[in-house]
Amino acid sequence: MFYRPEDGHGLPHNPFNAVVAPRPIGWISTRGADGADNLAPYSFFNAVAYVPPQVMFASTSAKPDREGTKDSVANIRDTGVFCVNIVGHDAREAMNRSSGPWPREVDEFALAEVARVECETIPCARVADAPASLECRLTEIVTLRGAANFLVLGEVVGVHLRDDCLVDGRFDVTRFRPLARLGYMDYTSVESVFEMRRPTG
Image 1 (spheres, rainbow, N blue to C red):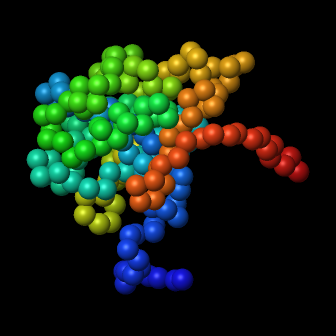
Image 2 (image 1 turned 135 degrees about the horizontal axis):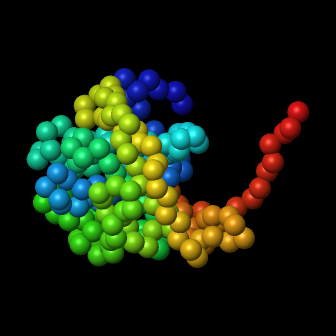
């Protein structure tokens, strides 16, 4: 099968998300200029540089009460900070609950019964028991082609690692089974890990 996206695929559901998979989930916490906290998952998320450490996530839809975007991007525009919380298998239901198109006044931490604590380097809350959390300062918001498509880039200025996820000096993902997004309504968790060393030629 071959199709041009501009012509459509003719399938019951868009296969694009299923092709680019699995995708890590960034559970993005922000705080609005009014002091209200927000928590929402984004599967267009990844690390993009080591030194200085930098991450990205993309927001691809809008809400009527946020003028062409969603709460996360609107809050980051106002405050210049955000926190990326890594999602383990055990937090899947809470993550999913926080993904709804809730009005801007809804506190997703409370809605999804997620414990929060304050970040160390930025004025923002983070998920208290996340396997890892990355405190970020905004570096750039890029407007992408299409309606309500925004790429958010940030520099990591603080890193939290849950103590039980550190084994022999390494951050061990098997301790929390990272949740990842597939296509459609499908998810997966990391169940096995293997090592391969790069060639040195």
